[in-house]
Picture 1 (cartoon, rainbow, N blue to C red):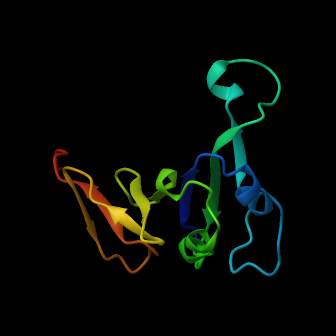
Picture 2 (picture 1 turned 30 degrees about the vertical axis):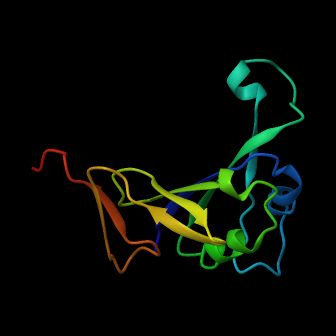
Picture 3 (picture 1 turned 60 degrees about the vertical axis):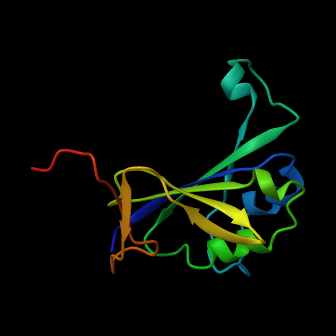
Length: 133
């Protein structure tokens, strides 16, 4: 099965927390590594910034089981700033998850609907305002 999912994590002052997720670890339930997106990317400056608030990863197949639970378990320095965006292959747009009381919960987005979809770990999110063929 050649499904993919893209995940973006945004979190303030989380460099230390996310750093282990940028390296391979056979003990994790999922094995891809996040890539850091430094502030310099947005400033258009060469080099590496000291602060990073964004990390990206793409999963091939259904091998991201346990990712949300793993992210929930991390000691976030500013948990109110944590945002996880997920776009599965069939999704019209990214879905947004945020930490509430220590648990990642999907935040309802206007004009979207999430429905169960057996080929996806998160279901499928569709825009309700897009033209239908």
